[in-house]
Amino acid sequence: MAGKRRAVVLLSGGLDSATALAVARDEGFACHALSVAYGQRHSAEHKVVEVRLDAIGGSALTDPSIPVPEAPTSGIPVTYVPARNTLLLALALGWAEVLGAWDIFVGVNAVDYSGYPDCRPAFVEAFERLANVATKAAVEGHGRFRVHAPLIRLTKAEIIRLGHRLGVDYGLTVSCYQADAAGRACGRCDACRLRREGFAAAGVPDPTPYLERA
Amino acid sequence: MAGKRRAVVLLSGGLDSATALAVARDEGFACHALSVAYGQRHSAEHKVVEVRLDAIGGSALTDPSIPVPEAPTSGIPVTYVPARNTLLLALALGWAEVLGAWDIFVGVNAVDYSGYPDCRPAFVEAFERLANVATKAAVEGHGRFRVHAPLIRLTKAEIIRLGHRLGVDYGLTVSCYQADAAGRACGRCDACRLRREGFAAAGVPDPTPYLERA
Image (tube, rainbow over all chains, first blue to last red; front, side, top):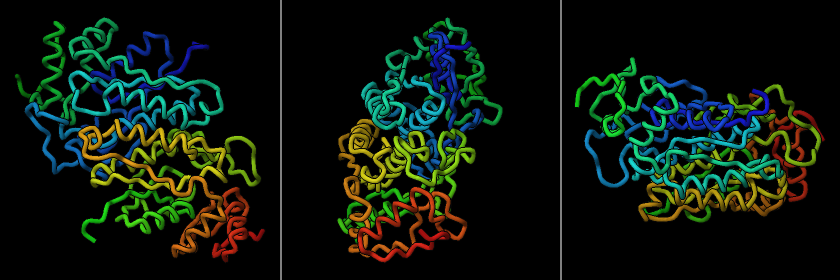
């Protein structure tokens, strides 16, 4: 595998980032997966860097006093975590610089979660621009960082079809905001609803162990 | 104090960030100080958020296998921590959004540490631009984030004179990269040398307890 370009892939344990990893592999990158535990409710994920974002709070995902919504809401959802993707990409950028990687993959998606400001193309472009003035590697002219968001304009069904074609085992991914310790999904929250509808629309069998049927 | 605008101030425990805090207070902000423990060697600092950047390594400040330099070096120093200020500002931005603050103060300085890419005006401007596309508060049009770097173009002597005028007690700050548990400075590293020269040039008495005299 000598000569393969390295990439850092942000991996949350969910469906989208698993698909982004499959895309990065398919494009020939040697992938280094980075998972971040930021005090979110479910944490069956592989932990590499721990950031106690629950010290800051302000989101249903990190603050137990804010309930996780079980119905679609208008506007930016309460599951928005302030500056989360800025932080995740900052950690990925730091690791990429240490590894000598110039490519960062992130599974953000602007379609289903159009409410999240840090899932939009404008955000990804602004971060890429920042990365290239923030780092020793870029400023010394050794290369240029690129932030890949291969799912950003896809629907959930298109993401699932893409990952299915690339061999992703979605049974190993967890989307639910309040999965139990065994990784079983509640079947009721926003993330479960989008996942379930995505598999149905994609015509791909849904391997998710939901605790509650639709 | 009702009606005062809030600001998040990144506080490292060092001389520069203490001065930035004094400037923010002098400008009338209600200040919320944020300290981040990122696995750096000295950690006498007030801890709010812990990020295990030593898991990533790549710097003399977070990797015990890389020695802290004791003489000036050319180019970007080995004490550069990959993407550190991107990460610190991301945490400050998240907290600012939760607090309803629009102002972030950071004590970066482009003069003495011109080697650090993430201490330059171009970096601060790129982060400010990112902040205003990354966050719910800005995207919903409630205001505009501003990153203040009041020391960015000052020499160390100018910073010390400014802080001295504003009443900063520099005896409470630690600049040394390898201070001991009691906060005593080594007197030999790059940061000690810059600090010592700064007090001398400013004509302000240096209250630092150096273990080794110049």
